[in-house]
Length: 260
Image 1 (spheres, rainbow, N blue to C red):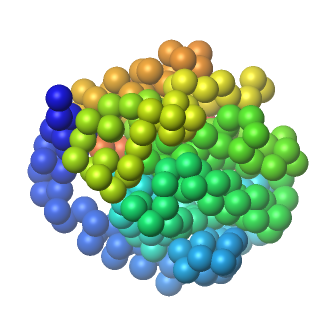
Image 2 (image 1 turned 90 degrees about the vertical axis):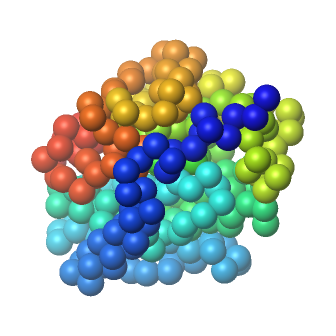
C-alpha cells in the first residue's frame, strides 16, 4: 500500500505553490522591523542555528517554534513572522533550523531540536512554551516526553502545542518520501509520540485545521487520545494556513499560550 496521497497536502490546497514564497517574504519583512538576534549557534553543523526575536521589554518567557516540511525542507528563515503574536504579548521567540533528511535521521533531528531549546533556554528566563507545525509538531511533542530535554529546561515547560502533528510515524514507511526519511520499525516505535508517554505535569494541546487531509486529522486525534490531552479543530483552516494564528496577538491561540 502506498500512502503518498494521504499525506499530500499541497495537492489539495488552492495556490499551494505560492505559500513558501509568501512565508519567506513575510518573515524577511518582520525581521527587518524587530529586535532579532540571528544565527545563534547551538551546535557545530551549518544548520545548527536559531534566531531569537526579543520583545520591547524584559521577556515574560520563551516561545520556541519548530518548523515543518516533513523533516526534508525549509529552515528558520521562512517563519519569523509567526513570532509576531508572542512578541507583541511580551515573549521572546526562538526559531531553530535543523539538519534535514536524508543527511540526518529523525531521531537525530529530535536531539538537535532538544539541544537548540536547551541553548535558547539559557538566553531567556521564565516559563517556556513550545509549538511546532507538521514535522515540527512531531518534534515538539517529542520534547514533551521524558529524557529528551535537559531536566532543568523540562521543568520550565508551561505548554506544548503540536500543530497538525505527525504523531505516529509508521504510516510514513508506506510513502515514497521514506526513501529519504529511512524510517524503520524500530525508529518509528522510538520516535512516535503517540506510542510514548509525555511528562505528566506538562499541559499539551493538539491543534489541527478542520480542512486538513483526513490523515492529519487522524494523526491529531491519535495523539490527543493517546495522551489524554485537549484537541482543538480550527474551523476552515487547511495545513498551510492553520499556523496563521501565531501572527495575531489577540487570537485564541496566542491568548491561551501567552498570558500577560
